[in-house]
Image (spheres, rainbow, N blue to C red):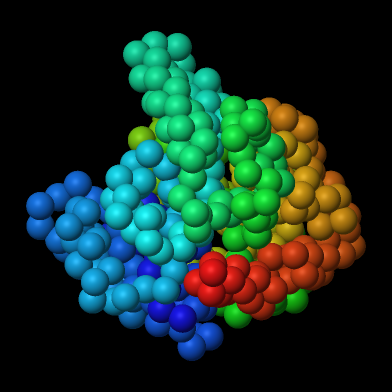
Length: 378
């Protein structure tokens, strides 16, 4: 097939955390023998291109997209992050090409509303809630009369439930699919853990929303600091965002906590997985949790909150689970494995096995390609 991937964002050398899960798909589609072009909608008069890890991404306006379509002649479009912002760019293509649209999170009104409600009351929250209302109106109008060959793809049942909060009466059951984000288990290869690895905890998160729960992680670490044997542990915290300095400030000066204001390439992430045993990944809102699943594939045991989509992907056989907004529970989950190395080792094996069965790229990529093939054939 000739597949045109239209993505709201795409990684670049200076911005690694922009839809890396879409990039893994592009590489996998190409490895399966398909031709793939990548386009990022951007309100600009001058089309641009950048290369990332052998993939060329073109960014530009509607005219630029039309030229890509004319030159590449795609058989199907895989749109990631489709909403009222992307729809105008694809207006002409929606009338004549099949489009499979992946909704990863903020495109869903219910998800965006929960993020907005997490903001402090004020102008920023009001603007965010108004944007949610616009998004809801868009979807209700769009799905009332959808294009003939348009199909929605959700990454979890939880994501579908969020969409149904606002769109139940217009959400076409027969024209939607649930396919998890694929985890590249070749890149994130399983490495058998030793008992001592449970003492090394890794965290990698954006710091741009309270929904990531990074404050819960900091509180959990401070809670652990009260224990006599806290110095046995080693923490590595990586990430970036406007909230980074504020959230991590209480950890300054804690000798066994390394705080690094940076994102990592996926190869660097895999290397960090090899040096750690526990992945601290608190959350208040998730439709899947790709970073968590990548860590699990490498054999790390996630410690997270059992909220949103999390229970679809982990249980106590492969993870340490806390309830919502429960920093104490996160700390206790870590310490339980410190005291019980056999539990940590068993969970490590189970984590790697579960990801491979549920979300491994060898399982998911064929399902996605089958979906795209069916759409193209229609």
